[in-house]
Image 1 (tube, rainbow, N blue to C red):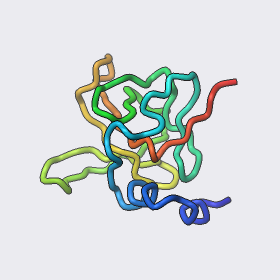
Image 2: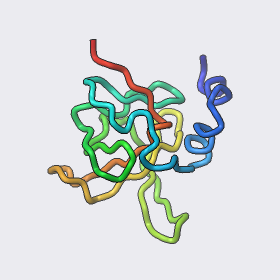
Image 3: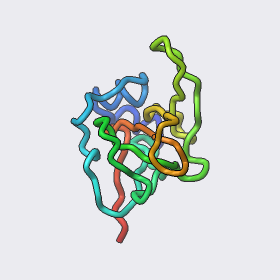
Image 4: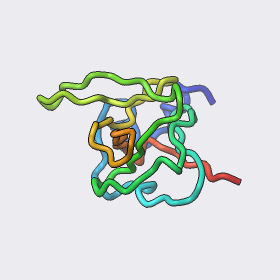
Length: 125
């Protein structure tokens, strides 16, 4: 299925977040507490975005990671809420995923705060 067809298959909430830049309600995402080893993929195009070994509990209510897979994310300045933030989008299909902040707890200093609804999970076999 191509990207445009996949977009048509998204739920209303997935469309609101992935295509319109919305945000899911904190602490509601299916992947928030995912602890298995594997990869987190873009819900729209399947691009691998994050490895499970970079995920951490930020206490914010959204899945958080300290580093993305190389070339997986594009960064866009976002000033929609009257503050300067960095939006994270899938580098392949340009779907909104969440935001990146410079307050992460690891040596990267990054916190990729992602909407669970934007992600699929693929467990290592």
